[in-house]
Image (cartoon, rainbow, N blue to C red; front, side, top):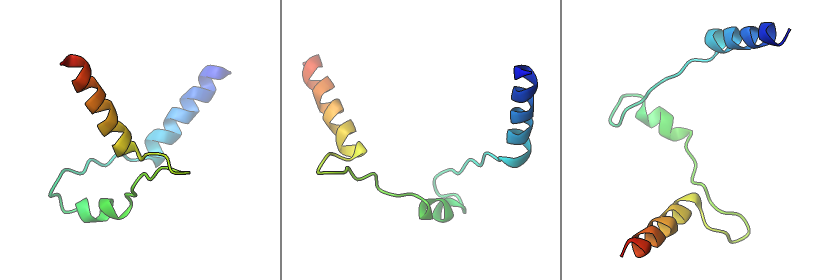
Length: 64
């Protein structure tokens, strides 16, 4: 029963979902960028980019 369900899910994914790879300077890049959004933190918290910069700085400090 479970295996049959998983096979059906995989078939649906293969049929209905399509993976599109867009490289920098590709013709589809402006279309893709239209759907991008800045990940702003809520309630005064940091954005994801700010978090990554903080982690990078902490790692650099640990390595020195």
